[in-house]
Image 1 (spheres, rainbow, N blue to C red):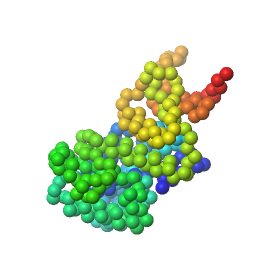
Image 2 (cartoon, one colour):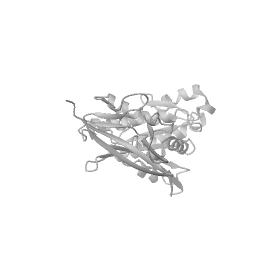
Image 3 (cartoon, one colour):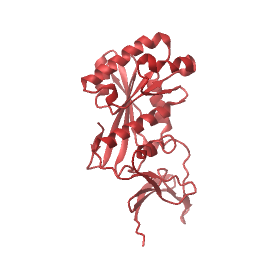
Image 4 (tube, rainbow, N blue to C red):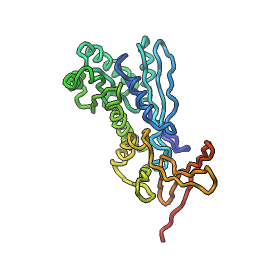
Length: 292
């Protein structure tokens, strides 16, 4: 289960990409990392381990707390290269809150892929976790070379027809973000169902595109969808729509930061960036609103 720090009001969830060497796990992580705004992501790290490499980074979907005042952070892991010691995979899976099983639709690889899935199942069982006890998404990669028809057969050949699956081309990024978006939504759903958080409202920052300052508030099952669906649109490296004002001092600019305004109850938090001569300072303006 995700690590929840109630004192800091922070949720830390772990996602692992699992699969054979060469199926595109590392390429998928690199693409995801490149598409997240730098202000919201940690460093892309590679750590040598037992002949392979542990690849990992972390990121926040939003800079502001959006889940009943809790800040959310995802930690993404995979192993790159030929894993000589299977115990390394077992340790990497420990404490995972969600899994992406990556496979390629190459007929000659199917037996090895099935064995890899069996091994993953055994590692999870060692922690008392079954395949249906944890959110899992099947990523069928390299369909640009194998073709859509071959890819469509993979879920049934692996016995994973009842799991969500996506056909991707990690080298170009096609479908990669959809995989993480879907799995993240599933992980958030499990966190909510766990009862460890007393979730009330989930706030999503406003886009600022010709709308009034404010935030959207939903309850129930749509909360997770609202947050995670914006992974690809809100925290990716698209040019944000900023409200920019030139101050009276020469060269001084005041912007509403990319993550946008956040509303929690009657409290409105407005993240501000103040820049002058290449130096940028950040602050959060908090306002309490009372309607009379």
